[in-house]
Image 1 (spheres, helix red, strand yellow):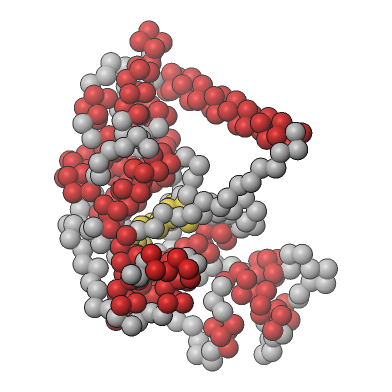
Image 2 (cartoon, rainbow, N blue to C red; image 1 turned 30 degrees about the horizontal axis):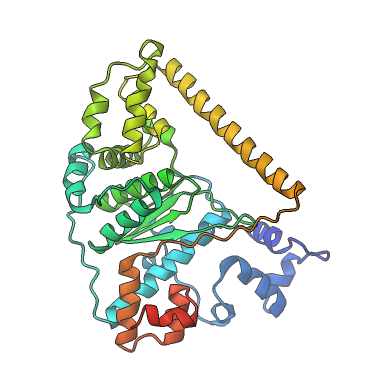
Amino acid sequence: MYRMTGSELLKQINQGLKKPIVETDIFSNEIKVNYLKRIDKLFGKGLHYYLDPKSPELAKEESIFFRKSNFATDELSLGAIQIVNKFEELKISLEAIATLSEIEFRRDIKKFSINDNPEQSATQVRELLYPNFTDKRRDFLKSLISKLSEHNILVFEFVETHNKKEKANIDGFYLKPNVIVLKRHQSFRREIFTLAHELGHYLLDEEEIEKIDYQEMANRNISIIERWCNEFAFSFLSGEYLKTLDALEPSNSQNDYNIEIVEEVSRNTHLSELAIFTRLLYKNLISRGNYAKVRADYDERYRIKQLEKEREKELLKEQGIKQRGSVAKPISSPLFISTIQTAFYEGILSEYEVSKRLNIKPEKLEEYIQ
C-alpha cells in the first residue's frame, strides 16, 4: 500500500535513534515490541494487526492503492499516503456502521461522462448543489459541504499542524462511492475550488489523489479527466459570470487587463483572480506574455504580504507579546454527524465511540445526541 522498500522503511523508523535498527532486527521470525511500535507510528494499524497470523489481503475494496496504480500527483509523500489510508479506513467503517443502522448512501445524482460538456454539466449540477452565496468564504464552503450531504456525498477536511513531520503533498482526493477529502488551506478560495474539482471526479466516478494547481487549467496536455474536472469546477463556481468572462475583449495593458471585471467576478464567485486569468489564458483571451506579467504581479503582492506578516510577528516578539495560535477545527459534514447519531440511537455505537468519532469532549455529547 505504501510502496516502500525495506531500506526506506528502515530510514523512516531510524529517525532520532542513536543506535540504528538494522534489517535483521525487523525482517526475521521475531521482532521486538519497541521496534514494532516504531513501525506502527508510520502505518497506524495498531499492534494487533501485526500479530494476526493471517496474511494481509490486497483487496480492492480495502484501498485506492490496490484499485489504482497511477495518480495525478506522481510522487505521493508518506504524509499523503497516511492521510488517504486514514480516510479509506474511515470510509470502510462508516459503510459498516451505515449497513448495521440500515442507512443507505444511495447515489441520487446521475453519473456523467467525459463526453458530456463540462460547462453544460456544471449548469445542471449547479441547480442541485450550489448553495446560497455569501461573501464569507468559510461559511460558503460550509454551506457547499452541507448541500452535498443532502445528496449523500460525504466531505471531510484534514488539518495539518505546522510541526507535523510528514506533510501531505496533496490538496484533495475522491474515494468511491461518495467520499471527498480536502486539505484545510489558509486560502478558502483554493479549498472551494478543490472541492468543486473533486465533485467533478465524483460525477465521473473516477477516483483520484492530487494537488490542484490553477495553472493546470491552461495546460492542454493534462489528462482528459483532469481537464474535464477543471472546466467543470470553474463553470460550477462562476455560474452566469462565465458568459461575462467569455465575452471579454483580450486582456492587455490598454484595457488594464480587464482587472475591474476580474475583481468583480472574483468577489462574487470565490474564484481567485489568478484562477480567472488562467481561464482567460485557456480561452486565448490573454497572451502568455501578459499572463506572465499578471502572475508575477500577484506573486510579488503575495511575497510582500508574507513579509509584512513576518514583521508583525517579530514586532510582537520584541514587545514580549506571546502569540497564541489554535489548531483549525475541520468542518463537519451533516451527513457524517447524522450517520453517527443514528448509529448511537440504534445501539451500534456507545457514547464513548460517538465522542471519539466526532472528536468532541464528553461534556459536549448532549449537543449531538439529545
